[in-house]
Length: 472
Ligand code: SF4
Image 1: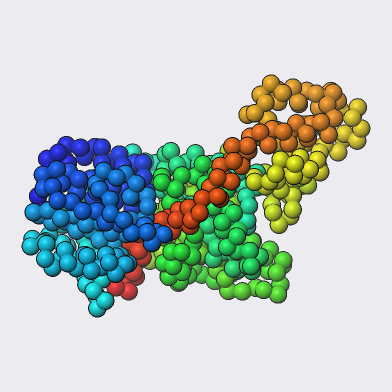
Image 2: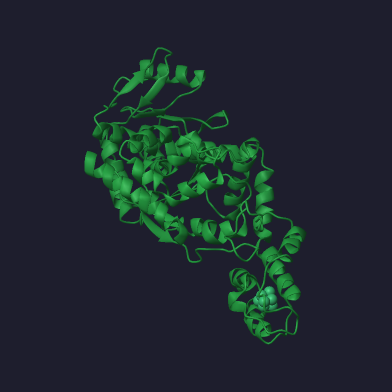
C-alpha cells in the first residue's frame, strides 16, 4: 500500500480517536480514515457494511454513521489495495467480496485472508504499514486515556437509586477519562436461578436504565456477558490457577450456602473466578467499586498475580476506583438498598409510586412526635436529601437539617420534600428511558454492536492466553 503524507501529518488527530473511543471502534475509524485519505488520490472507494439488524446498505466515505451501525465489512479498492473484511455474513457480500478479490485487485497487499469452503471471506487484514500506523496511534492514545474500566451488573431488572448513586452515576462520569466497558452479567444470574423467566426482560430493563442515565454506547462498550462466549473459555483457564481453598473461604460463598442450602452448585463456588475472568478478558486495569466489593476485587488481583507468575505477564492487576458514596441504605434504614429486600426506589418508578415508597422510609427513632428534636445525621432520609435535594432544591436543602434538629419540620413533610426532589431529579431520565424503549430494535442493536466490539478484544486476549499456556 502506498503511504500518504497527509495521513501522517494528521496522525495526532487520529490518535485522538483512541483517546475518545474504545480501541476496537477507533481502529475502524483509522482504517476508514486511511481509506478516505487514499481515496482522494485513487478515487475508487467502496464501503460496504452490514448493520447488526441485517440491514444491507452501501454508504460513501463521508457517511459518519457507519462505524456505529455495527460494521461487519468494509472494502477499499484502489491501484494499491487494502481490504479489511470482518465476517462477511451475507451471501451477497461474500459473492461481492470474492468477485473483488478475484477480478478487481491485481496487487493485493494482505497479511492473510481465508476463503473457506462456503466461499466466505473470513478475515482479511491490511498490510503492515496500516497495522504499524494503528499500533503507533494506539500507543499515543494510552498516554491520553487513564486506562480501561470494566464493570458488570447482574440483570436484576430495573435499577434503583442506590444503583444510580453507588455505580451508574460513576459509570457515566468515567466515560470522559477512561475507555469503558460495561457488561450485563447474565451468566452470573444463573448461579441462583433468580427470576429466570424474567431474565430477558431484566436485561432489557438494566440496559434501558444505563442508557437513559447517560451511558453512551458510542463511547463505551455496552453488552451482555453471554453474547461474548469467550468468557466461558477464559473462566476455565483461570480456574486452573485458582486453588479450591481460596474459593471455599470466600465469605460470600459461605453466605450463599447458608441462604441457598438446596442449590450449592459448582457455579456458585466458581463465581469469583468468573468475575475475575470478566475483568481480565478485556484487560481492564480499573474497576469502579463500593467499599463492600473491595474483597472481591482483591480476589481477582490474587488470581491475576498467580496466573502471571505461572505463565508470564498477560493481565494487568486491576485497581479499585472507589465511588464517592459507597453504600446506600434502603428504606428500611438498616440494609443496603436492594431489590431482593424490597427496600428500594426504582429509577423508572412512576412519581406517585416514588412518593408512596418514600413515605414508608425509616427515620430517626427519636422523632416519635413532630415536636421531638431529630438527628438528621443518623437519618437515612437526610442522606438521600444530600444526594438529591442538595442538587435540585439547594436552598431548601440548606435548612432541612436545622429544621429537623429544632423540630420545625415533621418527617412526613421531610419525606415529601425528598420525593419531590427525586422525582424532579429523575424527570429527564424517565423521559429519555421511555423514548429509548419506544425505538424499535434500538436497544438490541446497541447490545449487538457492544458484543461485537467486546469480542474483538476478547478474542485477542484469549489468543495471548492460549499462547502463554502452550495451547497454541
Ligand atoms: S425530619 Fe427528615 S431528617 Fe429529620 S428525622 Fe425526620 S425524616 Fe429524618
